[in-house]
Length: 257
Image (tube, rainbow, N blue to C red; front, side, top):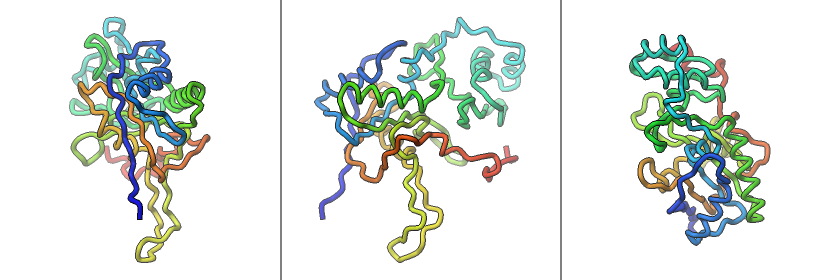
């Protein structure tokens, strides 16, 4: 039996991205410099931060004017009012606000700390915001890569998230294109012929986590990884990251925060 091998290749020497850059073109050019050929079926995993930079979603702190609402909330949670102003603009509803944590549902439907606003890997005088529509960002990059290479790839945009009841952070998918978000085993049988009833794996989150192993979080400067030969991943031109979100009715932890 031939062993199944999945290749995860981090693109090194990736240039710093700035607003207006053609991110897909930079990915294709950097892959070539790394002697990596982009092929049909590849999964391109991209750090949210460079997508935000290319889309001009970086805000200088000096340009932020806190509202009265931001000032009040900043006093409650003991944070910079300018940060809170950005968080509020990105927020649909506040879930938990305390000096320890500020958890919100952002305008994309993501449940996250500080609405995804942070200062990592951007200039010290700035904050970065999540892309306005990560699925649309992924779709445009996928289509542009096809235009440049003639290859049909999938795109996953990843960001770092904390998890309830677990220390540390992992990478989650926040935008996808050309890939089904799940690997659904429901209705199949296991090794002992037991019927699988709930096994529906969020494979795009697993892909984002796997890519992070080569991308890193600090000075590695590897914001893109290419995954090859992942047979478990299924293609789809209609899937959305929104399929992973659960409704408030489905939320087993509602009213606990």
